Figure 1 (cartoon, rainbow, N blue to C red):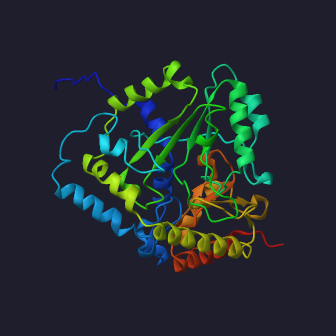
Figure 2 (figure 1 turned 30 degrees about the horizontal axis):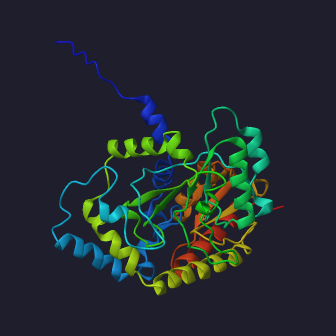
Figure 3 (figure 1 turned 120 degrees about the vertical axis):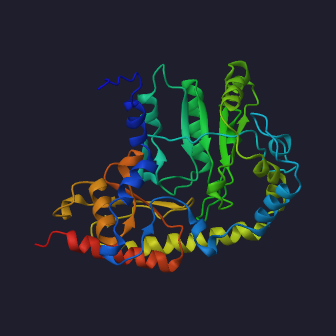
Length: 370
């Protein structure tokens, strides 16, 4: 027998990196589901994708814009790395699509639940060192559902300036707010500290599978140009593959023509869902929600582990919940918040009602009884 010797082997570093992603964690939890055993259909509240529900369907304008782009035959070509011109500079006053971005995952949070999930700026200063280059701000908040005030955001910009760093503003849920606080773009404070803003069609237009987004730079002083950050961003865009050209071709019409009534209705649905989930959660023992969500599609729920007799931590909770109730939540450990749960409330009312019932049954079943 000829001995076979191969020079290639699996990359364990890639496996290790993949194991830390939210997608991988959710897939592991899904692997615990057997609907033939539970007799219950799966409820997935572990990610923010309401597109599966008819009430959250995107606007017909969005669908028509894509069909029009396809039928025009003008967008069957390759695109430049930074995106085609119509998508980069649409004639629209609120948005300026600059470029495609890859997914950005934040693994550490300095948030203060007792202050409505504000950023712990004193903590940021203590943690900052010579390797710190940016403060990443997610507003409206994922995973917290928070919306930051103008005053707090100004303090964040001032802290960034004091530390000599920039602000990366993840505004994927821009304007998707339904509480008392209005959405304030971080770019408003660009004169204090330079801001790189990430935006997308995914959430506000309810098309997460399109994978289209942009990067916008607010830098009136020109710091990011002088330091070469802008040119570095452009180089990254040349390396990575851009989203389909036909989607880029649809952008100008989508941004200009989507009726305001569509956004108003989506926010109304989200507010009703958030209010209902927050109030009904009070009925469930060993779970607590310190703040009603004000934006995005998520809420953070705190586990009282001392009240369970056989639940070790948040991951154990989610694995057992999936097995027993065919229901998926994201353990807080996946986003740096051990023994919390991130729940998406972007679902139809009947689905949320069912989810709350399953959560309550699970907690009662696993609670200590003195």
